[in-house]
Length: 230
View 1 (spheres, rainbow, N blue to C red):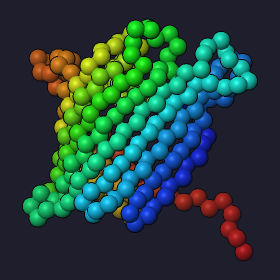
View 2 (view 1 turned 180 degrees about the vertical axis):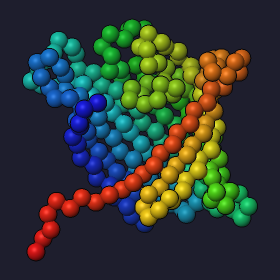
View 3 (view 1 turned 90 degrees about the horizontal axis):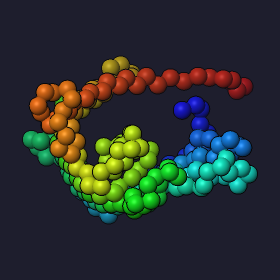
View 4 (view 1 turned 90 degrees about the vertical axis):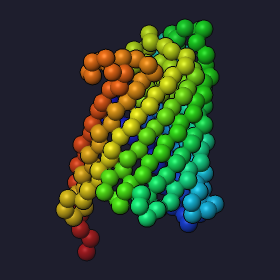
């Protein structure tokens, strides 16, 4: 997408932390609806091993100046979860998180009326980091009529192709992440994952029902001084 504008507030406290944001994607004009998304993450730590978390992401197509010939539409996806984490002598830092997710609405004004406008799902994530060398993780997802329209379509009943729809979805992912500091503040992340999407056959691994993917990320922060004060 082109340049977007918005604002974000991040707060860090001893027992809780959170952030909230608002992001404009399109302005309201005669030929298009206004588009913005918004959300929050709030995490409370009642105990050093336990975190309670609330997440929300919303997407709005609307505007009061022009209707562009299409109705106002909205989509929201929310999650409530609990995470347990600790460090052990042999397996390193370990965590287990469980989230209950719900969705409401559909941005597509032409979606078939028979499709449910509300959905739900469960997400379970487990990880271990032996001596901090790498992180081994797994993700399990079970959903029904869930729709987060700016999220990963593997977790939605609607696919990247709007014509694809499957009420009940299952998704599994297992992967390895290696995080390293190269020099100064320059960091490198390497990630390799295998996925199982419902029970569909692979398009890359023959008769297998697993796919694979990888990701390499280098972060190189820098400062740009626009003006020095006197």
